[in-house]
Amino acid sequence: MPRSGLVRLKQILAPGGPLPLSKSTFWAKVKTGEFPQPVRLGGTTAWRAEEIWELINKRNPPTKTKR
Image (tube, rainbow, N blue to C red; front, side, top):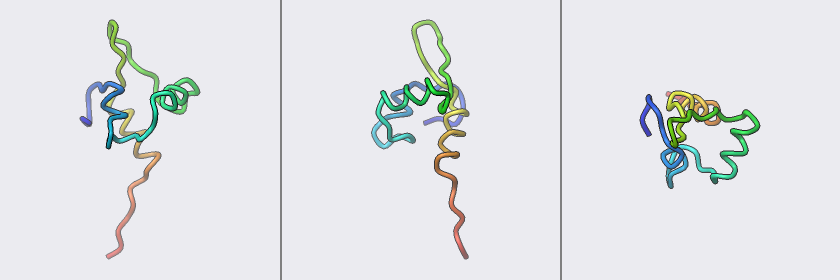
């Protein structure tokens, strides 16, 4: 998934994608405000990649390695 620009739902929820959720769970979280709202472009629904990466990082904070 790109780090910037717009991404479609199939890029976000793809097998092995960054968010292993069903479409219905994803949309339910959008509706409650837990996930970012989409951007509508004509008949296309997309999300800002930066917002999705921010969401991913909140859900899975990076771990620090010990040296």
